[in-house]
Amino acid sequence: MASRPDGITQLYEFPQGAEPERLPQPEKTKEKVLLDERGLLDLPFLALTVLLVIIGVIMVFSASYARAYYKTGNSTYYFARQAIFAVVGIAAMLFVSRLNYQLWRSASFIILAVSVAFLMLVPLIGSTANGAKRWIEVAGIRFQPSELAKISIIMTFAALISTYRDKMRNFRYGILPFAVIMVVLCGLVALERHFSCILIMLLLAAAMLFLGGVQIKWFALGAVAVGLFALIYLKTQGYAGSRITAWRDPASDPTDNGYQILQSLYAIGSGGLMGLGLGKSRQKYLYLPEEHNDYIFPILCEELGFVGAMVVILLFILLIVRGYYIAMHARDRFGALLAAGISTHLALQTFLNIGVVTNFLPATGISLPFFSYGGTALLLQLFEMGVVLAVSRQCDNKLL
Image (tube, rainbow, N blue to C red):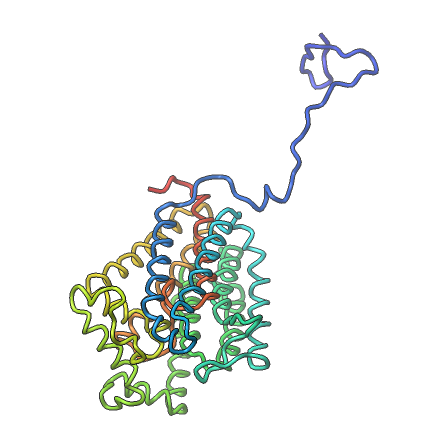
């Protein structure tokens, strides 16, 4: 036996000049940094997401086949495209769920820069649909940059808040950088006249800052500023005022501004308790505009009735609550903010869409997550769900 300089007894003395055989060391690869193998993803959240996507794709087929046949001669046109994006989106969600969510801390600023770049391109090369210039079309696929901007707000705010966590009551760190981001993004989206998106972005930003611990007085000042802007907008934009009038009394303009909401209410009312049956809607036969898109929920009510509508709403509520539950058990502040921000985004968009189609809120263009037709929007929604699942892998406590 020999004694080593560090005082540890060596049981075997190697001959002079001989080197002990070294065991092969595992290579440190980027995969070990990027991929997260710590735990299982949250199965209830995954199951609820996949179930909503499946129901959504079925409803796209049921709501769209009349319009698809009328426009293209192929009754499965919209359904086939949505189904392909759903399969790709679920695969992407599972892949993103395996990534270490800390990756998005630094990538958030890249996503923000890309969002700003795309938004700047919309007025220059954007494509127009239904009188609105909000899309960029590449190889026949339309992409709405404002959807990416919402995700960039969640990720960038989460990164900044978790960095400045002890300075969020300071104007320089807790207000200024966030205000600059919102002014830039909202200003670019305003050029598209997409004010429903601005509303969601402002509410998302407010929710993130509230979770970050910003003083209440800044929310009051922000609410006053937004209220003044909204008042000026309603006074200067004639069509906005007519929408408010149609919201208060749709029957006052049944052939123009009130037409769509009246047809939506007819669809909801005719469904009754149990509905007319899947595929048996009457309003989808070119009576209700955007029946496969923003106004797909009234078709669901007409075909599946009050019971079917409540089941779908319950699934959304369970998914949103589960998202907040994951946020509460997240491993760190950044993960908690990511999961809470994405859950808030899902809650806002669901509530606003259902509120509009039931005439609880004034008409505006807001899609229903997982249901409204739109491949790239569905991909981004499933990407967000993948991020929440990635957070669930690293939760401190085992989720129930």
